[in-house]
Length: 187
Image (cartoon, rainbow, N blue to C red; front, top):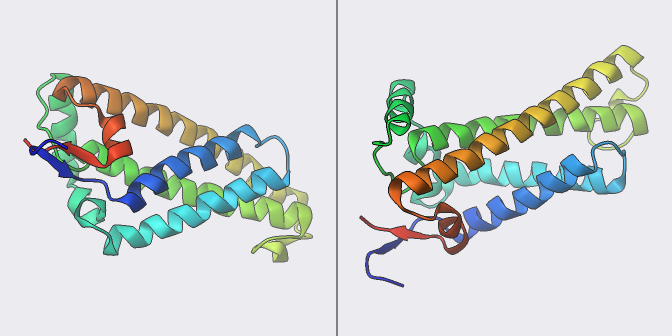
């Protein structure tokens, strides 16, 4: 490791990130089936999200929300500067990336809750099994919400990937590699 490298992403954040990628992908691809695979992938995602929220308060420096949740004016200025290819480089999450993390965590929580609601109504199982027997309209609303949220999450994932690629280009830095190794150049 070069002297100018700095450890940014701890092992928890890296394992969380890549496990979430797999968990969400499996859940999304198996979404048309009410299978054990889909349900278990959903529980994996929910567990990961809950752990990440805790880690956002007690984790290492760059994992904490206080380190990367910026004021809206800062985010707006960062996005403007990015479109002009002159955005400031951040060691941890940049202002737009920080808010994307928060938005994705909230979306995944909503997807998980609506999914557990559907599972509770349809199969009388899971933490929301008490919803079994609800009118069909409740099931329809939860099911449609779950699907719309999951598809919107896919859009957020694509925006996230685009942001990573743009930032990697602007700053001449491989951010995917950084999420694998945990290291970025100090600069």
